[in-house]
Structures are given as C-alpha cells and as structure tokens.
Amino acid sequence: MYLARNLNNNGEWNFFIRESYQDDKGIWRSRQLFDLGVDPSKYIHYLGKSGYYFDETILEELSKKGVKCTQDDLEEIFWLFLDPDIKRIIEDFGSRSRRKKRKRLTRTKRKELFKKLHPFDKRRICFLRLGQINMDALIDQPLSCYRVLLFKSRDEIEQMISQMEGRLRPWERRGYLYAIFDIPSYFGHKMTRFIPDAQPLKDIDRFFLDSICQLNRDKNFFLGVDDWDKNRLHPYLQTYLFMYFDWAFKAPGVNPEYGKTKPRGKTIKKYLKMMGLSIEEYEEMSADDLSRYFKQQALKKHPDHGGSHEEFIRLQNAYEVLLKRKTWA
Image (cartoon, rainbow, N blue to C red; front, side):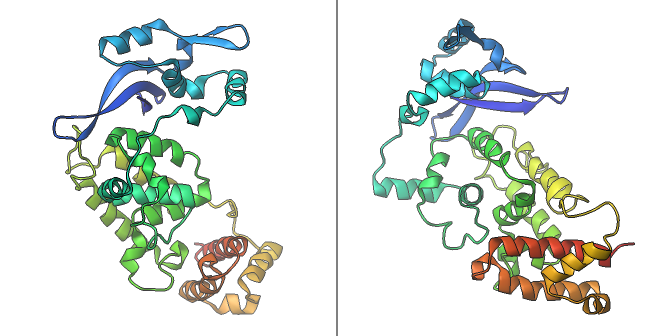
C-alpha cells in the first residue's frame, strides 16, 4: 500500500490509499483502496500524549477488498499526518525502516530486474539521490538506489518520485530537467554538454520538447496505465512542462540574484569580478561574445573538471545577471 495524492477541482490535495498489484500478465497496476479526502489526520485518534489508533472504517474497507494490513502499514501511510511528538517517540524506540520487509534477491535476479527499469525512472532517481547530471557511467550500473523502483506500479513510482522532487531546491530544477530528459545526449561529444547554462536556450527548448513528446508515446513507460493516450500529454508528464516553463528555464526572476531593475554600479562590479572581466571588456562584448566567454570559464571551473562547486554556482549567477543586463530592452 502507498499514499497517493491528486489535486481536486478546488485546487486542494486529495489523498488516497492505493495498492500496486500484478495482473495475470505480470504487469504492475494500481488500484484505489480508500479515499482519505483533504484531511487524512481526521482518521487518527489520539489517546493521551503518546497513544493513538486509526479509524476502524479504514480497516473495514480494506478488509472488504481483501487487503490485510497491520498497524505498521497504516503508520507508514499516515506518517506525514501524525503528531510530531508521537513521531519522536516512535523514532526514539526504533527505526521505521527496520520494519520494512524486502524481498531477498540473488545477484542474477537483481541484474535482470534492474535491466527492465525504465531509463527515465533511473535518471530521476540517480539525480534525486546522487545529484548527478553526468550519468553516463551510472545509468547501466545495478545501483542499490534503483531498488526503490522495483515491484511498483507506474502510479506508485510517480507518487514516490513526486514527493522526492518536492525536496528539490529551486536552483536544482534546471539541472534536474536537463539530466532526466537526457538533453546532454543531444549535444554529442561537446565538452560542455553537461552544463545547461553553456548551451543555447533555443536548442534546450527544442530538445526538451522532443524528449517529453517521445516519452509520452512510450508504451513501456505507461505499462499498466489505463488512461494513457499518446495523443495528449499525460498528467504524469504535465508537471515537468510546468516545471520547465514556470520555474527552471523560462520564468523571470527565478534566480534570486536577479533584481527587478537593471543592475548597476557596485552590483555590476561584483559580477564582473566573478566572471574575471573588466568593465571595458564587458561593454565591448555582444551577448553572443559573453555566452562564448562563459562557456570557456565554465569548462575551467565546472566541478566535473576539478573546479569548486560554490565557485561554479557564483559564475552561473554572474553570467545570468550580466547577460540579462546585456539583453535588457
């Protein structure tokens, strides 16, 4: 069982208890077990400061559908909604993760199952767990972090990854989208292919849209999904379209270094120093010249080439602000 959520017509999150199961053909599907509404906490009843139990209507409904569950199972479902003091007591007396029973797999079986995982899922987990844009050496490895994708329906995988994506910081979303849609592969063997800011935005736009459309037509990705229609963008992928255009690559002012007005004076000197430019050199540059200069600097200071992560972030911020000033209407 797992906790799922969807936005209702009022713009509120509606929560559900769902279950992944295998059909007669061995395909993992999802079915709904119980509608928790917009406030799942109403199904938790407290006894004093340290005791609680779950509403019996849940157990009754699950029993009618042939589902057996324990207190620990429901605790996992309702963990987000439990009283913080209760959570601390539970954690003090033992890790919840110890109660989870994992299927024991031989090395051969593990490799076999990992090969069947969809590359898009592995890229998402790889970035969310390891923070890597360059996944060439990782994507085909039987990494233990991929195990969370096993024995789950497409819906359960999407619900799980959606929660993990919620922990992404705003400035990480650009690299995340760039990596999971495998945009570096479109740039061939360029040394800067793993640096989003070193590529023309119009090319990234085109490659992103190509990738998301290809994924939307991929029947292997939507295996076990009943409402899949390759002619319309599925809600599982719509979230990435919004993330791309509203947050990561298109939204004005996403970078906290951006101001509402054209930066001047001391502010400009600070960014020029980060880029290693004089005011005279900068004024003589066109926007294209500045982009080419940034690519050269990015190659030298990128963490994958021995540079400092903090210095590279500062370089990106400086480039974005200076380019914005250069192209200001």
